[in-house]
Image (cartoon, rainbow, N blue to C red; front, side):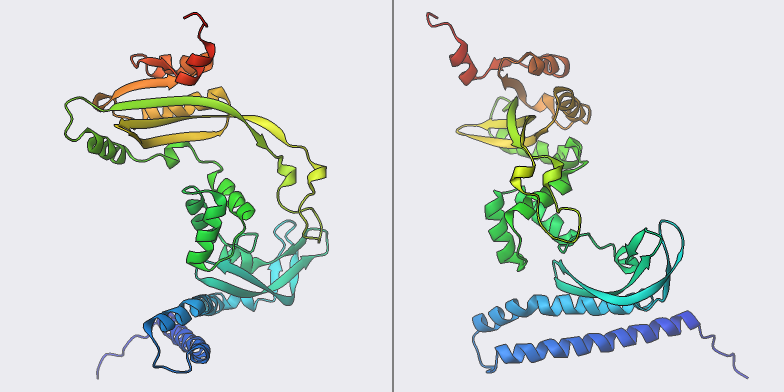
Length: 342
């Protein structure tokens, strides 16, 4: 008598779930093919016409596939009848499902999730939102990260146009600014600075074919910039989706300080590292010390000099961290403050 084969129930369930998912994905793809057929009634079209049609419908396909996967992967959350209140622990009964459409880099995804409301005053909750790690707004984290990454490379208005053209996701310049601000919260100079290897590579490119080490300039400065309070951001409390009116808040000028390391290469400059934000003089000094302690600037490979204005708070940090670097007063402040007879 042969040995009986052991059947693992979890494997059977996984196989069944995967087959059901495959069937649903095929059905979704068939729906997309119907739309493509409407856009391309004649299959004998040029490559440009084919790619344009597929490009216009691409997010309907990828977003729909993602939606189907979410429906299968979180079937239990979508059909649950009870949940615990995250604040008071009461057992809550599910109310009718509420649909929510979110925008991702692969397209819009509609999520139908049960709603649970606590009558003790704790408010309503959507457990599926937490299970999917959905961001509060319509634009999800992948969109926010991609938009912020593009915004740091070009002006907001230009980044808005390029982002929409490349992704198909419409995004206003103000929302783009908000995403960039959110992405930068909590970051330090070491989080955004290039690696030492990358900095050394740029230095070697400038130093190639030269007898003397390249000149590395450290510039430090501060300026007052107009800002708006946190009360002017986001939406007002309540159901109405209205931004705060300008008359309800007053702007404030705040001191923005920063520094930049760059190489002098004949008629051009080569950027290495920069850090500018609304911060105090002490915070700037701490950031500059972090760069120094991390060894990001190979001082033995360059001729470091510091070009700044005459503010004492600047030179205090320079003397502490780079005492051997030549200190140069910048041309503008030199000409503005020199004696007429000199």
